[in-house]
Length: 182
Ligand code: NI
View 1: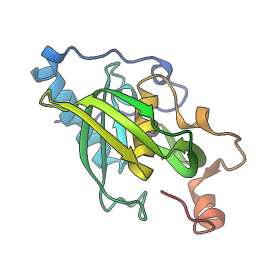
View 2: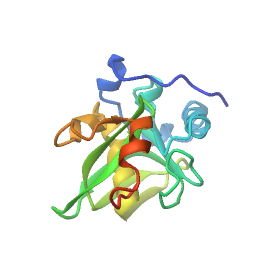
View 3: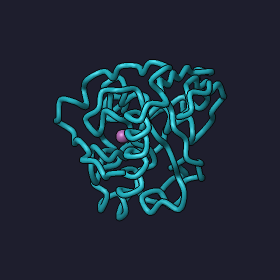
View 4: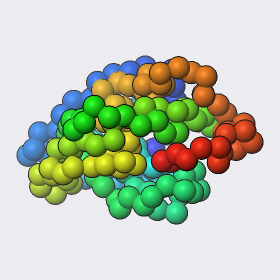
């Protein structure tokens, strides 16, 4: 396993679209190593999730986990989730605003509207089909990570940039002002 270098905003790889992985390649040593490295890198930098494009690999793989995360102390827990070729479809028109950050946009936070309920279709790391309904914070993280696989970052989803703030200023002026998901 290895801790990989995370691309920061401005690196062109973050704007590229990832390729799906062939189902027959999911269990290959190469894919399994990528999954392990994504998990290790996400945990090292306290990410809530990490997409392969963020570590310069244009494959449709992302990992999600929230557990005692110092970057998101109030977030609800999400067990370790490995997604290959994920497709996220909104189930309602309803959107909710919530704070997001991103390892590729270091030390920043912004309010992003996201669908409150989505259908997630994907494969897990063993090649099993996943088809579940996700809500609230998990739905938000899914939309954030799958956006990465399509060359989008959360800034693209903000309605306006007036809430975009450095983390230190967020702690000083914004934290606890309103109920937020994350
Ligand atoms: Ni991100």
